[in-house]
Amino acid sequence: RPDGKSYVGAVHCRYQPALDIQPKTKVCCDPVWMSLFVPDKTQISQFHAWAELQGMQNAPGRAEAPRGWVTIARDAPAEELYKVAEAWSENEVDHVLVPGSWPAKPGALEGRSPAYPKDMRKVAQQLSAMGMHPGITYDPLATDENKAAWSIAAADGSRWLDLNKPEAREQVKKSVGKLVDMGYEFFVMPSTGMPDDVLKKFNITRAQANLFGFQALSEAAGDLAVVPAPSLTIGSELAKWRAAIDAMAPFAEYGVASGPLQMKTEGLSNVP
View 1 (cartoon, helix red, strand yellow):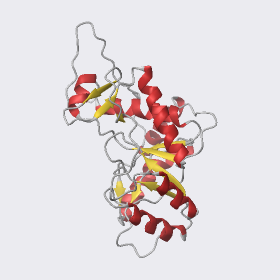
View 2 (view 1 turned 30 degrees about the vertical axis):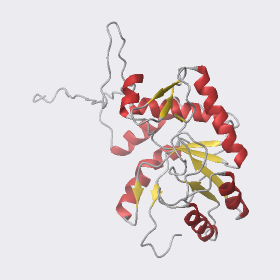
View 3 (view 1 turned 120 degrees about the vertical axis):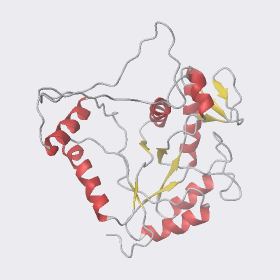
């Protein structure tokens, strides 16, 4: 305010697709932290990291997420993945990720021909033979099971799990178990490809769908590492790397895991 004695602000959220709020429905917002003084930037980051730590519960026995992995462009074929994995193995990178374009269709566990073999076990085996730990990008909300009791059909013909149903969560466990049996050792979950018309039917936001999916995938994966897909890609811009380090350092101080960053290596002559 002009008198300098108070602050006025607002937070607006726009949902696409929109959420339907029925009569007598309770609407809750995320917790808001308010400080009675304005600390410096470093203190704000430390307080934020500390607050995040208070709400975290580490799953007992879960493997630590890889410190890094190598992958390829989303639409590149398996042969390219083998070449990249072999090249990076000489730089002490021993985890390799199959990108999210591998399924023949959403929810299927068979490879998309001709880029990938139908039997995705072959990909895991070849990567393992190179001394690499294979991981796979997986959207647990998609299914190729035509079960109307616990899934919903989208306008494009794809089907999506209703995780409010116990049978749907069991289906996630079944699918993840098959991928583990194929030889995949860690999972990366992308932002779900659930179409807007299905989100509308469930009356949830994409952020909620991602959260439900991540929880279901983590539960199904047992002691294997599950991490979200990177949402930020940085190339050789030093200023951006410094900004990312400044943002993540306070979380490391309190032992809070930060999400992964993707590094674009094209044009770089050396990676230490």
